[in-house]
Length: 263
Image (tube, one colour):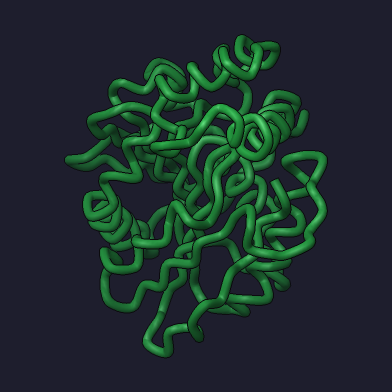
């Protein structure tokens, strides 16, 4: 994955009071978020980020390298204005790293960190290790079962374009380790998972709570690993509710609501 940058096909919305930065899964691009703006509440601008948003950008070598460059993009975009970080699967690691480094005078902490389809950093999914050595055909079959292969993608095109990008991202996600000294974000944390997602473990998802000083909420939705992309209206409503819940209050709280349980 090249370091996520922000495509600007239109000028920033003048009425935006908060920007929602979205980082995709391994092998994904900013295009997976292209329709999200239509479901966003008034005042929220969806800012897709990911591969393909910066021509000629060289591939990054680690999750932290991606996060460092993406943090600079966020800083240049938001200034001192409020924002939310959302990452899906591998994108969750990138969003977490940016949030953990934020909170300084250069980059304020996000109003909310949303991680989706990913176990906490210290509990990587066994699936990643299992598929690393598969042949192209075997890997493509695994990805089709997860729902990540675009309809109509031929094996030859997959082998030349889709799979090399995915393998590079997968290696970065596999070699990622959280810092030995735990780095917590000062943003509230919202953890999302599909009830039929084989890449997440319900027993360990609440352990994301140790990565935030502001508590976390775990929320489940129907479907598998990529079902979130089909539940954007639900997601936008949940983000709005979390932002209202995260307004100033006692530190270290856990959010408990209808959609999830506190960590």
